Image 1 (cartoon, rainbow, N blue to C red):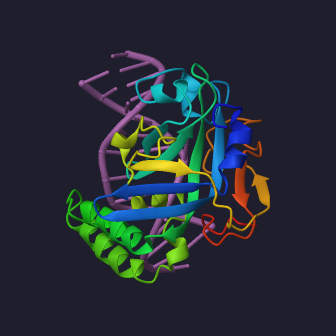
Image 2: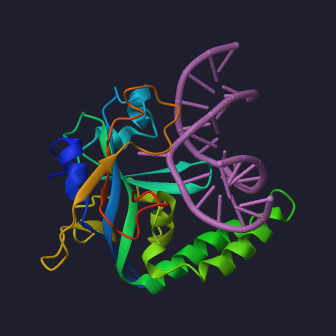
Length: 223
DNA sequence: TCAAGGATCCGCT
DNA sequence: GCGGATCCTTGAA
């Protein structure tokens, strides 16, 4: 499915499961929000400058992970789609925890700690970390991965995960199709988020897809 | 080598 | 609703 056209792949990823299994246990989440970035023509895509060292994996075979850093702090997970040679990927924006929510919470905490430990602007960052630590306790399980940066924090995904074959069930990080008992959900679509630098038509093309009514859809955007 | 800016999250107003 | 934190990637010099 991932080898097919990117927009269809994006739709079919809604409802699929993201699985992380490592020494600390198993974390499973249901994907409820994605965005498609298609080809070198798409001026919102990282592929818009052509092939570079960072985005090379987008041009490779489908089913691989592409993890990049935005705003200097947050990792974002993408699934490469379309055949080798065509640059396209689906950004995983939000996931609904199914199993291992406690582990996700611990991973979120670990993410905060690594940043709180750094002191660049004279203790200010540590103060931010302390507050974030407190507020994490108030976050409901459903919202533990309700945003692209949070998905990576909750599943301990970082740039070294780039290139992982997400279709390999033996991989520490991989995808699984929706279970038979999962509730069917309507898929809605709308313009992508955070790409104000792109020009039309790319800026408003409705290539963001989400599961209607899902609690975990990022920041009040479930419409 | 350098400067600019970004597919975000959070707290506070 | 706004702004701060934070650092990697990019393209041009």
